[in-house]
Length: 268
Ligand SMILES: Nc1ncnc2c1ncn2[C@@H]1O[C@H](COP(=O)(O)OP(=O)(O)OP(=O)(O)O)[C@@H](O)[C@H]1O
Ligand SMILES: [Mg+2]
Image 1 (tube, rainbow, N blue to C red):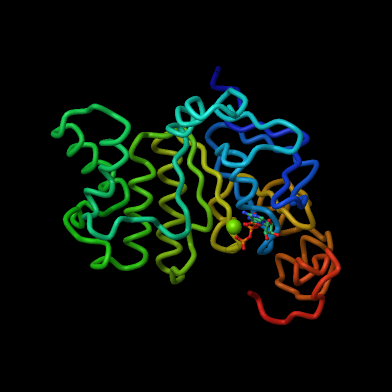
Image 2: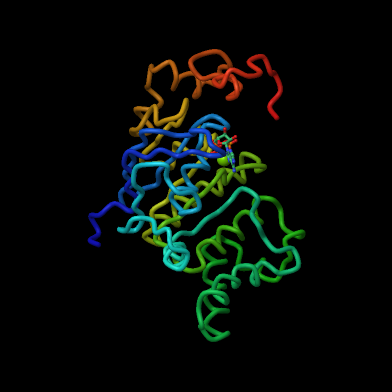
């Protein structure tokens, strides 16, 4: 593929889960080099969309192309494609009995036959990239939440993926750590020549580093444009989400649109 080809191209996508339709009529093109924010209320289908990009969930209809090819359904081909996608999930997923360096080394040990000294060098570079070279020998329990998130980020970067996917990278972080992580997302994207998709409901921390924003609500994409255009939007659906209002076109409890429990007041 040429550098002008988008890294993700989604057309007419419909995704169902547990026999229920979650997203429909989704069209999305992610050009190379961009940081794209995917925003939307809880339960709107953001993680579901990511699952379609990583091939974990097959489309009910429509197409998903990643890194220039349709996402394969064959397991072997899928594993190969996934080497090109760095994924950071909200739980970090660090192994507690391994040091930071050993955690970062894991994908290199699993997916390459590089000799030990080369792996050590690559691990040191990745930890340096997230500003944590000094923490190489620390165990996850010895790290702050923000540091642990950065180690997980270094591990996601280990195989130099052209595409990075972040699902709620700021969960559980204070505003300072959030700023550090989002700044890293942007800088790593640009310095390592990656493309990044950031799923989050942390609108105000994410928009400043994004090139493009997409809002998902009520089963589809309700906004796609620049962060500036998003901030200026007068669409009631978009405003309700941005301004955090419980009443409006987005039902507070997603079950409400299926006719159940419309008056629930606590998030599950
Ligand atoms: N494995 C599953 N089986 C059945 N339904 C699911 C499954 N995973 C998610 N869903 C449903 O799909 C819908 C979208 O969920 P999803 O996790 O994609 O939302 P989200 O936007 O990522 O929410 P959050 O911000 O809370 O992470 C929800 O109604 C959820 O209940
Ligand atoms: Mg989610």
